[in-house]
Length: 182
Image (cartoon, rainbow, N blue to C red; front, side, top):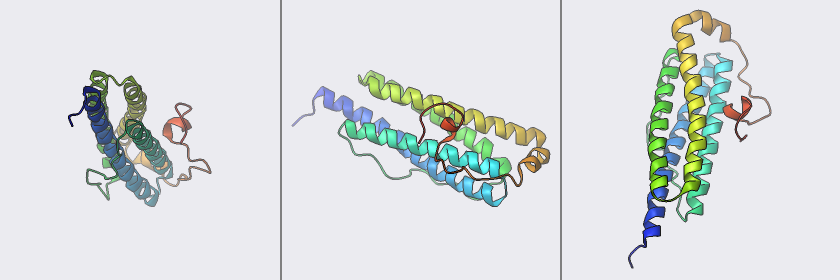
């Protein structure tokens, strides 16, 4: 039995939603490893923000999964890329801003696939998540620039700060006063 045009359209949207979900699963793993490493290096404030960003990515992965299920698909559960471990604090932020920049570009392309296949709900989902990924990019880029220009002075100011995110499991965006909380 041949697929209808609408079934083909849904299949294309499910495919990009699953690619995005897999990217989020990678980001979660990468950022949590960095969270643990930053905490071990005694950069608590940086570790706490990294954990909050990972929580945002968890919410994104769940939002993509829910939309995939609404369309009759099965969400992926695998992480498609290797997690980089043991990064120096000076390497983490340029690395992560690169990941977020690539994610924003990919999600904009995925958004267009959704639009071309008549799925405005998924378009809106990508628009909202792209806004949050941009906030993550800005944080990583700004922090990386602070570390690059101020070096040990900046890092010594952060050394010994608390890594606790408190009793809340709010993500970075919600902690900044925007978006939905996890």
